Length: 229
Image (cartoon, rainbow, N blue to C red; front, top):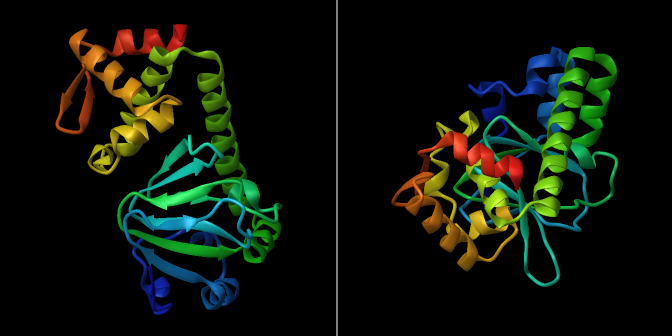
């Protein structure tokens, strides 16, 4: 983990939502209080149960958001791509209810909560953006709960394959950085079960694996498995 020079914020090519919507005065105050950090692969960015004082903005890299359980059977809730937040749903909470871990080197911007609240009060477009991001994340969590709670292993794995093959990940080479254990933790099953089912899916012509990469061969059947669970 290493820190950034704050001047990078003023010169950033990736114009974040705060800088896009804020005026000169508020953006100046924001830059002064901003914390920018670079994390190496496998480093913990946010720890479940730690004090929640900032919202995390991912400038570059990939990270995974997980919920930790006492029996070490963690569940991966989401893979986060650049330009997205984590922690928006915890802006009113004192502690983080999840852990975030870098899947590759990540550049992170930590936004103080008070600046987000202030800009939401003064800029309706920014507020709408935050509300939409929260709504999207809430929908993802509802779908995750439904998948894990109501579907058999084949349906859960089909859901994960469809998720990882979404357009959001096309430019990220996500399969280069996630493991079969990660796929298992996204599917709510053991690594052994995930590997066995991936082999079964490939034998049945549903998917094709090239090294670590997974490609969908039969989208209709994968969607059908997802629907019937």
